[in-house]
Figure 1 (spheres, rainbow, N blue to C red):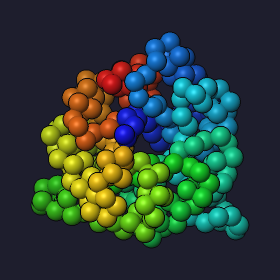
Figure 2: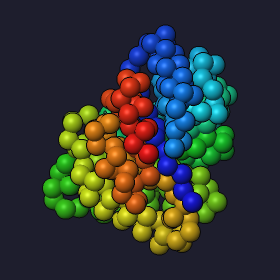
Figure 3: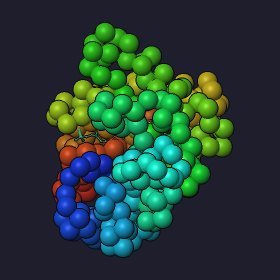
Length: 251
Ligand code: 13P
């Protein structure tokens, strides 16, 4: 059966030394109180090596927040999937709405990134979600269906089985406005149905679908209690060990 996962997305926050301290704190907290789910932190590229050295990979997974859509070569400033993997990281967030919105990522570039991540044994945490206007005009299911189909449905069933999905309604990110547990459950069940149409029920049932968007200790338990919500992708609340652990302990 699918795994429950709580993953932090640190975004563009913390210096290297602050990040290493935070990672050590989370690592120590997980050693002190064993989590009932997988726990992952996704950190800036600069932090990957020192954080990998500071944590115990058996209690805390590590990921990047992005990777390049090319294998290697003359792409100044880019960081490849192979480079990310060589730090010891085993996850990579792909298609975050901030990347789609501010850096023009399209389904086409994301298909390249997903393929390179998988080639390098990185587990993609693939993000999807509608903007407020699409929530309000009722097109949100179709928007999310398109993101899943265009970004991922070129994959073989075997490769699709390595993907973690994160539903992050853009209107709930960093706004303090969480989707209700019912809204999250409805969308997650819809996404699982879309996966089942393409890959069959077994693969759909084995796919972890995380919720992201103003998830915090006070609302995590209600969200995670829903049958199709398999954990969270946590932004702001992942930057404080106590808050992050408060969410982890909702499982
Ligand atoms: P917040 O938890 O800060 O709303 O961010 C969610 C997110 O974008 C995680 O990827």
